[in-house]
Image 1 (tube, one colour):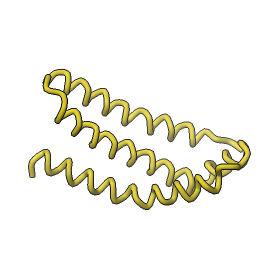
Image 2 (cartoon, one colour):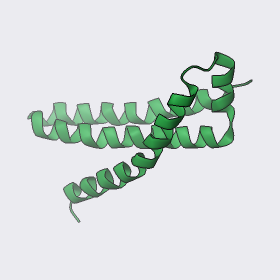
Image 3 (cartoon, rainbow, N blue to C red):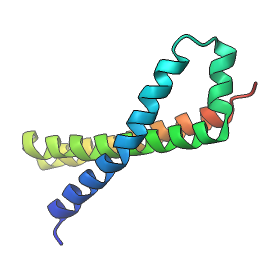
Length: 109
């Protein structure tokens, strides 16, 4: 299997996982929209909310990394610049969910 096929399959797989997570997030966003700060922290302190939101962030950044790297492949002709842009994108996609996960796990009521 070549690299393009792997990226295509991973994009489809991550988008299939993102659909139920996005539905969960939208439903809960509507319900937590008018909560106070303490109630919001309480929501994200619950075990299932932490886990689902963490998975949502991980798969969202994974999906966006795959799709943005395809844009780099199509529109950046300089090979070195394309490699640097992809590496920065991958680092960003690792660091941001990690920071989010650490912050969510440090919530205290």
